[in-house]
Amino acid sequence: MKRTLAIASSVAMVALAGCSSQIDRKTASGSYEYLKTKEEKSLEVPSDLEKPTFSREFEVPALGENADADFVGKSLMVRSPALVLPLVTGSHVEEGKSSATIWFDQVDDSQPLSQAIWNSLLSFLDEQGIGVDKFSPEEKVLVTDWIVIKKEIDGPWYSFTDEESEIGERFEFKLDVKPHGRSAALTVDLKDYMQTLNGDVIAEVSSMEERREEVEVLNQVIGHYEYQIQLAETRRIARIRQGIQTEMGFNDDGDATYIVEAQYDVAWPRMLLVLRKLGFDVKDLDKSNGLLFVTYNGDQGSWWDGLFSGDDQLLKKGDYRLKVAKAGANRTSVTFMNNESVPFEANQVSDLYSAFAEVMSEDNLDI
Image 1 (spheres, helix red, strand yellow):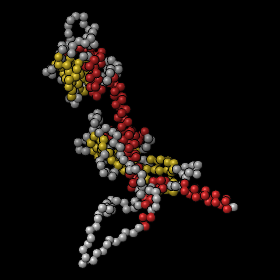
Image 2: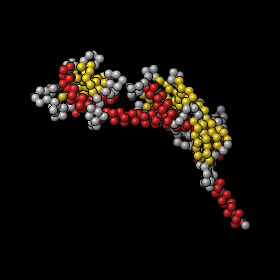
Image 3: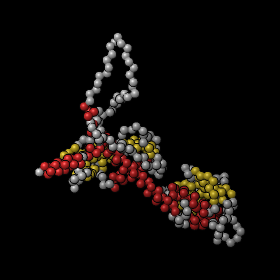
Image 4: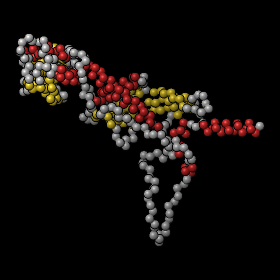
């Protein structure tokens, strides 16, 4: 009987030892006896005696104005801090910022920065099946509908099932755009919170847990934004390598030119590949103004083959310039000029058209 009781007592003790809660795993281990310690009064020295010099080496700093005095004992979490991850090119975080905020800088001029951020956020919410309760670009605010998440909480070691907790959250996204429009900060605030666990409803969350939830959803938004950028870049590179149709036409100044059936951001890098294939060396370039400064090295057997049977040269060796400009939403003009920025005559543009259009239409040019 005594042996049976001893075994039962041992099993009970082991079970109790293994029954650690989620809070126990998030807080410091050990004793919390220090919470019972009372602050001792400082040494009182009579006025007629000289006060000794006290060392301030181990002095505990005073709490800041915004510090939460309740973060002691088991209420103080010891998990690693939640950090905003600036994964997007041109993004950064401000040191010491307590809110879940990330700054974006304009790196793509194809659309306004604020529009790009909102489009990415809406795309993320749609992909995750999250509804939008309020969206006002004018007020620069978006409030999500309730996001319901089911999480399994580890039970004790002797339990074969895990406890299930249901968490509902609503977030508010605010966009702070600088007056010049090329920098913007996206901030996330946990607007509402509700958790059900074992039939109990918890409607409050600590400031540390609140920030963790805000940072977690913000990092998901940032990751989606970066994925979209990478996907768009992959598609753009694939489009650059594909053949592009070309026709003759005129630019805005009335000069004879080539009209390429592609957006400027695709036609510009494509021109670098085409010019190299045609025997040009690019000496300098200015994408913002669409200028290419090139040197033609002469017939290298790739451009002129089969075009003429005589000794006529379509283009002499030397320096030239090209003007690449938008010619509509999905079209780009390419104007050949001499070294003095004088456009080629229409007959010369016509003579060069076959060779230029042929190389421009080739697939899988090397990048």
